[in-house]
Image (cartoon, rainbow, N blue to C red; front, side, top):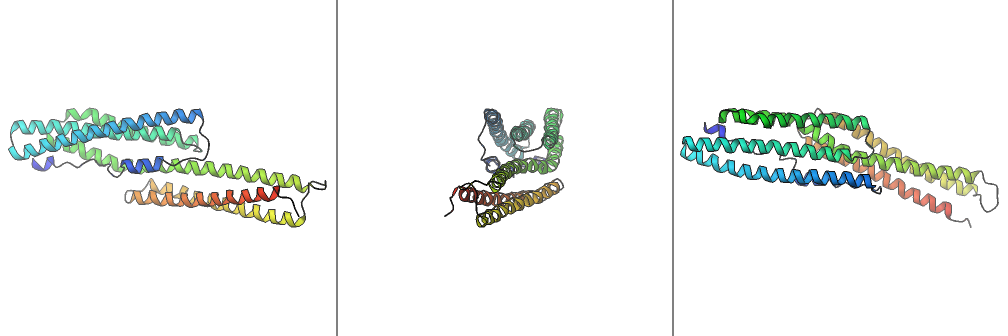
Length: 291
């Protein structure tokens, strides 16, 4: 019976608070609307609920360790009963943490920008299914008659989490990916506006309003280089698209795979920043009078 009490600690330890905060602190350059602020409030509430459930789990786990130690020492019926009750509470608290964590992800996903509704609905449905599974698992735990039964229930939840973890990272990468997509759309729009302005100037016949051929050559070259940076950024986003497909099949080194995707998104963002820097130079040149 001793081996049945050596239960694993919380099996989602890789998704610690620091990792969550790093992912969710990705900021958008767009101004927040009142609707987004309301969604932020929803996430804050879900996050606080997660923190409370995590604290409850930690207390339950400490109690479990104490009762386990007492049972291993005394081997009495009373100590075994106490250990079983503590194990039950710990496993229920662990399921509550998973449920709260997944609910927190859903709250953040609901406010994701530039994510297609089809993709958002698909991820939401899959996360909801996992919340339902862990809710049912938590509610059926009291039916376990022995410590042996509880260990089997624990193993079942741990096995389930192995399949959930790729989904978690898929949701997490979708959030910064959406913000990069939004940045791309705004960069495209700004470049298009500048190109349209140049075409208007190109058709201008009035003296003092038209540019020389030399200046147009410079501006055309600069807008071409700006567009090239945006194209390179989009290529990086396609690369991440392909990596997201692979993460669903991942069972090992998922965190590394996720960090690789974050790195590629960083490269995509860098190209966009360069494009916007170039674009500001183009606009400045348009406003500068020729000598």
